[in-house]
Length: 304
Image (cartoon, rainbow, N blue to C red):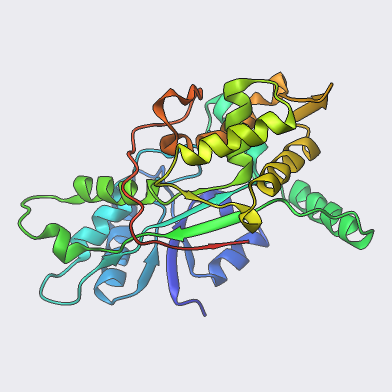
């Protein structure tokens, strides 16, 4: 039984994924519901969990990012936690967590939804099963390739008692802004997002030029948590390029690597994940720069 409780949308209510997610501590919520009774029951559930000291995980943006960038926080569940907090009993401590990936398995689904302007994802179990079988076949035939790197950072904890001291009224909005600010500053910077950003900014480049631009980009983000595999910039550049070439997001000809026009949305998706950490003159299109990155401070990280 999981010691963690967290909310997921109805998109995950597909067999057998739903049973696995539920076993991991999830409870399903209807984000679009406007039913007053449903919302009161949900609020009561979160308040009871808060007062009982249950460890809760929440996604402050309230959904998957369609463009890879940080989104504005949603206040619903956070407000329920604030309302469930009793200053005369135990404190509530928020631990900011930020994850990033060289490969998001559902990236094409998300970017397609962004183009269509529709956040409704139809879970097709047949397609999921087919992809799983394909990966199994690649592994059995010795042709399986890893999907790059993933990393997670943990930021400075925030005490609700300390944050609310001296503040009057509803503190949900300023609390959400503070949490998102702490999360934005610890987003891991990985090879694929960096190489994507470089190619979008500078266009076709030689491998040597990409490595040089990568070195400049890392130097321009001194407060960011940059994950350089094996502590080797050359290897990081090669690792990022290998992933992009393998997926057909870029092409290499005449000694130069160039982004493909019909795959630019996917390159932007990955570059947007670190856009808020990059210099303002990066020239990167799209994304969300509403969150400023605080000083690096103390953060624990783990990557694979």
